[in-house]
Structure formats: C-alpha cells, structure tokens
Image (cartoon, rainbow, N blue to C red; front, side, top):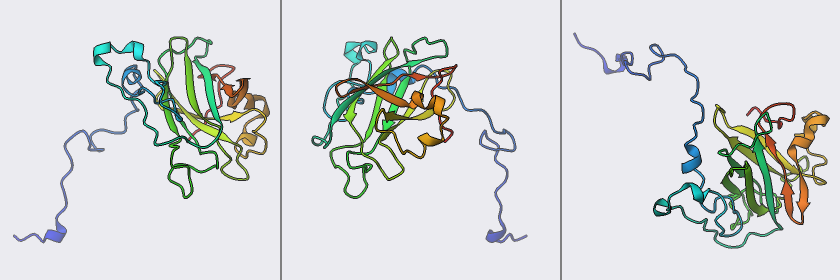
Length: 219
C-alpha cells in the first residue's frame, strides 16, 4: 500500500500538551519567589543610576550580583518620585509584592515611537519593602492624546494573585478629560489618582481588595 505524503496526518499527542488527554487547567498562583529574582537593583529608577528597585537586604552579600540600571543619558522632563504602599483587604502591608510601570516620555511618546526620547525607556520594576512601601523615580509623563491625561500604567504581582492586577496612576490636578478615567464611577476615581505629597513626590496606595480596593482593569 502506498500512502501519499499529502494525506499523512499526525497521530494524537500522548503527552501533557494533548488537549484530548488534559483539558484546560487553572493558572498557577504567583508564588513568593518572584520577589527574590525579578526586581533588580536600579529597576525602579528610570532616570538615574541609584539602587532603587530590588530589596538588597534579602540577598546575601556574596550572592548580590544585581546590576544597576544603565541609562544612556538624562531623559528630558520633570523628575518626580512616586511612592506608596501595597495593602491587602484588611489594610495590612504586603511586604513581598512587585510592581511594574510603563509610561510615555515627556512628549507623550512611548519608547521606540518616532521622536521618542532615546534616553527614556519608560519601564520600571520595584519590590515592596517590609512596610508594603514602593518607590519609583521617573519623569512626569506627557499626554499621549487629546482624550488621555498624563498617566502611568501599573501592574501588581503578589502571592495568591493568579493574574497580574492592571491599573493606572493619574496625577491630581492633571486628570481632567481622560476618557478611561471618566468611565470609572466617580466615587472610586480617587483610588487611581496620586496626590502631591511634597515637591515632585506623588503618593498613591494600592489596595488589593475590600471596600477601598483600587480599580483594576480587565485586560
């Protein structure tokens, strides 16, 4: 018997990738170990070369091989700090969460877009401290369009959270006219708006659940 090559069909897979044998399974919850491996020294400083980002006290000195960030130059714009805490539903600080931020440059362009600031990557990552605190050093972003107020996209990773929690950070006094924020119930918009704590320092806590839960977006 001759079998035409074009008529050949693969047999069913007999491994754990075969959907006929193993159906869809739930995602793994985020464990505690990412906190040790993913944030890096300098990851929370989008402007300079400080050691913001990781928690060096968690690493033995002999094993401390994380590198500082290496900006190619000084980004344009007004340098600011963003500070706050990550809290659970009881208001208890979450000491081992991780935050990521993405943002446009001072002209409202993302990294890689035509005309974007070549010295500003617009991405940062930070671990929370024992008191749940986080801190980023960056620049005040520009608006990316007429319906967009200056904002920073934020993702939060934490133990027991199956998927990252995606939200935004706006700046009090600059948030008017934003199309996304206007869709959030008025009584909950404050959970997304940072307030000026001191000169060029903006503060916003993120609450993972409960009555004061931050508004998170289903992406």
